[in-house]
Length: 569
Image (cartoon, rainbow, N blue to C red; front, top):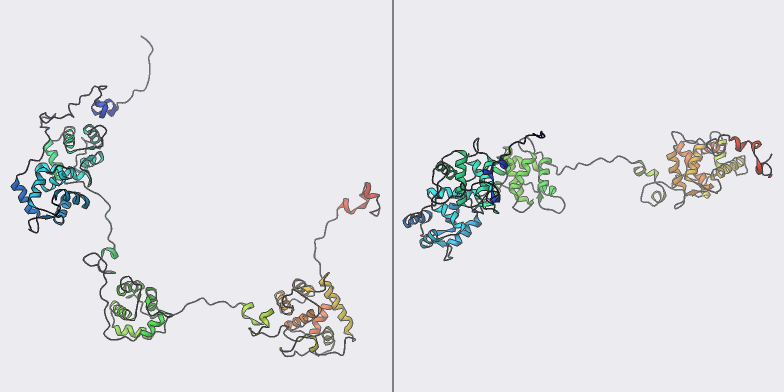
């Protein structure tokens, strides 16, 4: 009969295929075969279950009933109702805030005198027509129908008299309507059926229609459903139970609260007699201060030995907040004595014992890091330049002794058993004061003196003087360095003999340096001079270049390099 088509059978989608769930224009534009008779209820029509669908409105109360209610709300019996009398009543029954209650009260108070008399109250009950009036009437004029109306307004929220879809779903949940036969999704569908297209809220009349549809869907009795909603009173709120916080919820610590909720401090106790601890108190205040802050009070308690298991540093901080004036951060001596009374109460001892402990203390205990000894700073014998000669430091003269000539050094080395004496440190380092240990330079040391001069020039290079680096190399190459005279000692010694502002020394200053080297090593000056003069000069250390055949073997040269005469071929 034709081609056979195979495909997946599409499942039934309730919200699409069940046209009874269509809402808005989809249920009323004629393009879908749906009957709206179940949602359009007239005041004389019937419900699907046979019950009356008429919107039950609160019956008009009698004037006597209104007068009885007025007398009930007039708590002070002065014949009027004030805003202070009406506010707790409305807050207890409804979810209205202070601003809404004030607005409602102003609409009731036609005279504007700040109070409601019986005539204004009766006129408002029978003629008030605003939305806020509807909420207030449902609360202040109770009846069976007004209880349902008041529950509706409570679920609407504090600032609205119409209900959103999410609040309608919450009402169904809080009233235990949601279950196996009626789900939250179906509550949303019913809300969409009764809400006016383009709107997001429903009025109380539309809410009553929604209750009819809920009763039909869940199979409940309409009157029983209305009673359940009316007795709910309002939404149920669920939240995390906050734990008790001692310093916040316990009103007795650390500062007591008055009945108005404001912080207040008790009058600090006074000692029975003067405690005589003013000197110790002043020492902990420091400087020119005559009062003590919380940190200083905690240190006083610690340094005076008051802190123990019964009285901890935290107790000291809490105690300080009790005696310090409000808005202040420091206490004077009078408040300090009051604090000592509280310390004695906390420790369970007499206040005189606490005062005696404070009086016998030695004052603040200062703790600091012990600085290590720095040789170049603390050893003043190493001072150089202006620091070694300006009188601001206790250090000897620049050279540490007289300058001895080279002839004197060599002659002293050749003279067995002779050792040059060292003059006082105040002697001038000029060459004129050099003691004559040998007759003259024409002696046998003349040749050695010339060797020492040549050696000095060898270390100077192209210059006529030597710098600190060259002097250190001279000491190293001449084998003067050992445990008694290190390379650091050589640098310090050079700094002693060099002229201030200069970086190089001449031959005469070099002789002075050799005298200091001998004093540092504990050897004779002539012996040091002999060791230096016998040196072979600067020791040069360099990398030995390998032989390159094409460069070093001239027999391999070709071309102009082998014939121009610049190479010995």
